[in-house]
Length: 198
Length: 147
Image (cartoon, rainbow over all chains, first blue to last red; front, top):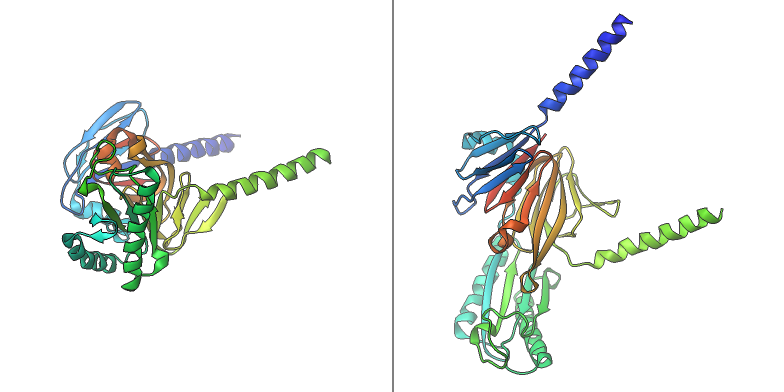
């Protein structure tokens, strides 16, 4: 009986110790551009802000908070080395503008080679091509127009050797303007195709 | 027997329903995967291949030698080390309709979160839930480890 009690006691102790060992670590680090944002860590005990790079909050109880501590860059990066080693680059965005119909502006024509370079450098396999129109004309007409714009960019990319299956085209007609205008307004900045390279 | 039949029929019905719901808009993609990486969707485990589409509600899980990089529609990036589990609880990115939200939950493991456009547009609607605390994002790069 005595041994059983002792066994039960050790079991409880093991469970308790394991429970205590479980913790959540939250570290704020600079992003790839070198900027550091701000985060809050909140639970039943309140909310703590972390604003300096390589500051870390360690929480082991949802009813407790403790002030953030500074931890070295190397120490943090070694804990997260696997996750960081496979971190994808952020997507790259381009906007191409149109004179009219599917005729690109001369500045946008120059951008086309940058798009191809970005696709190759990013190793992109997911490319969104989204067509837009300004508000001149009917909803139907502008939907077709924005679709023709997106299709023309897609066709050009495919002609340059980009795999068709990597490209998704969508058309927003006049519904998603970059610059909000009244109906029937000629706005060059809304006649566009947005390209997102992932 | 009758009840059993109803059970079978409803299982088939709900089963096909959940397959149909795979048509919902994707929220992100698997950009790169190494080792064992699975996506749990509608109680089914699917091997996560590069370029696979992710849906709201997916649980992404890496094995002891697995790691994976994910890109979301708002340009947010999540990468996961080995033995890690993350659920995409909520993802909405339709600024024109004012529908915006990104809630991810890390159950265990190590992960890197790089915020995207949602943090700029609707910072109060972006958060990462962990077992003992909720992390609010005001940009930009957060590393989280859950034992």
